Length: 137
Length: 122
Image 1 (cartoon, each protein chain N blue to C red):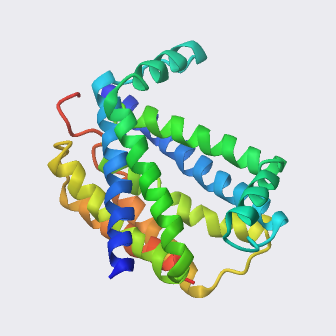
Image 2: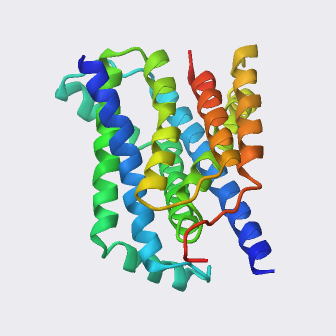
């Protein structure tokens, strides 16, 4: 029973980690696209560019969601293996093309869909392994 | 040469940082409650550990090295190449955190590495 509870708790947290990471990155990308490309790399150009970036609601929303990602990541590794959480939460990389396609209208090439499929198979192999293999449990 | 050096820093500092932060959380033990007060208490204790700050420092080093690398190297090469972090991280987990990785987990990690490299390729 304890092992089942641990698996369910880990699964829920890994999904949160993957979703927060993916959504946070898409929100940041959306904010940065509103701003346009960095016009140059000298301090006099970069400083005002980033000041403008921090006045964008999308950027702050992205940063907030990425903070949630970091906190949920810290919580899950308090009991689960690092070598379990990291590949399992790579499902977020499969989610990003999907969100990019649905929210930003990005085209997804057949090669990227193949990559998404490999990630899904990889996550499906990692998923059933014991979430914690150190002596803590 | 410079690209290889920075790529190595990105991969090793990034995974090293995550492993240090994981070690800090393992020292605190399993988080059992999810009420805001419990979570704030856990985070407060976590950020008093040197391992956590070492982890954050290494992750920041990896982030800024990645930014520097992207200023001259092709994003279509750099970002997929960092997918090797999954394998390096798994080795670090085995050697430093003493995790027991079976065949299934290794196979999954290898597939995820190749899949992420393909998804991130431009």
